[in-house]
Length: 246
Image (cartoon, rainbow, N blue to C red; front, top):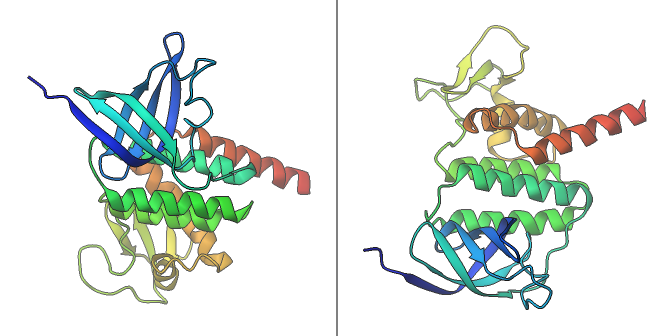
């Protein structure tokens, strides 16, 4: 028989919420010490609910629940610290970060380091305005490392030979950098650029553009073909801006 567990005042963020029955909702939550989990918030959509207005993404919360199976029941929530306000590109980027967490983390797998990285990223997005790309690339690099998909950006595949700054490499998704004679291709980079991505020198435009190319393909590979709704919206907005500037 499964024992019911009660958790009190756990630091958490809501990643996603969806209606459940007449006035309830199901929350996908990331908590610091209990990882990702799903909770039913009974009556929380009702007009008189004291939780109405705080059970939303990007709000730092202290959350309590009871759980006996895969789905728990929320027993309390309160705001923990100042609310984080995201708008425009930062808001869309926040939803993209949430989708990555939802797809790449397993439920009930405590990973405090990922929780801390998530919180740092949301705060960075709130402060970044529309200059969100460097924060997103930093988050992607760190998340991949923390879930066991770390990028190899310092040595050739199949050896411990350090990358040559002048040599061109093709980054093969299941292997890593492989030396090639050609100088162009969607995943061809110099050793110097790969090293700069590893050092997260995203203040340099050429490094940031290269990181965009690399991380887009790497993340798509690990998502197994799943399309993220938020990324599609960001790409569509970017295309419109380019067309409007012509």
